[in-house]
Length: 358
Image 1 (cartoon, one colour):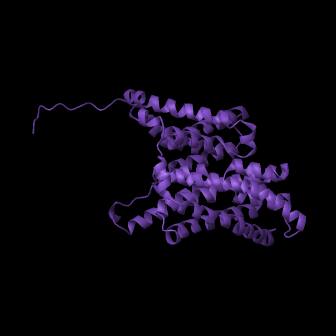
Image 2 (cartoon, helix red, strand yellow):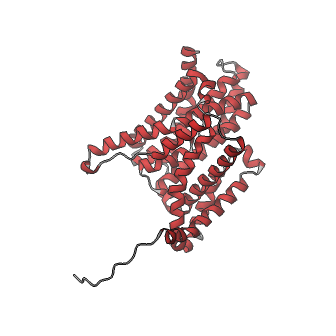
Image 3 (cartoon, one colour):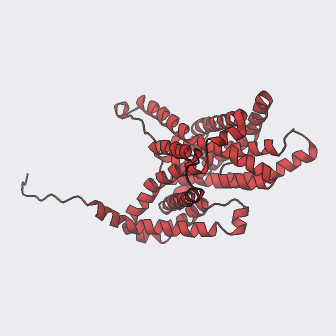
């Protein structure tokens, strides 16, 4: 051993920060472009959010110009994909309050919980057993379908330990079938009104929509296509469903840790604690107290959209189209199965719970 070999100093915090600036600026630019496009009336009317646009733009750049910039931008892109995502999930709590639960009642909470649990369980079982998919992809698709779309996929990624291409595939299924539901739900509602098949009014339609449609933006669009009252109820039901994200992540972490403990490397198995999920609940709790000025809350929600859009942009930049092609039809088939369950099974759950609890 050469005792005179010099030890290279580790980079300082300032050096690491400077190294991340190019990537952060790139993801911020993509996020800004996506948020600008999201204000286009046609895109708003079709429930296409800034998060969806950010990942699409990111994928386009990631498979064209980004490989030439990756050497300089990779550190900042990594920060956006990891730390900004967690911060965005925490601030997401400002979009709801605990009072939202009271507005949908016990029936609404039970419906959301049953839809969430049954959809995710079906995704896990069907994805791994019927379609032969890897567990990570099946769980990510299940999280997006059962809770709140792209945000849930991104939040579940650290717990599931999925790869960038797996996350992108899961988000893509949310876009495809959430958009389909946004148009299909109002159409089916009007057909039901015309024929009187089921006793579903605007309020019941709102709870059904909020408990089964993927993204918040898609829920708003599907609700407003019927009435403002239906949209209000749908958003409240959706927010209660979003609130279940934190306990879902904790339960999933415990479940996966238990499974790893019985397999290879059991001695190293450990629980991945999603601390940001607790931050999400804490922020929602503070928002429930109504101690923050409305202007502060509005500004923080805008910041949250920026952070999540930057995370989506980073995800898109690091996803290769070849990986999406390799995923094949199985993810879409699983997402189609889940969409059918949300539509038919979700309707059955809604009718059954309303019949029992009123």
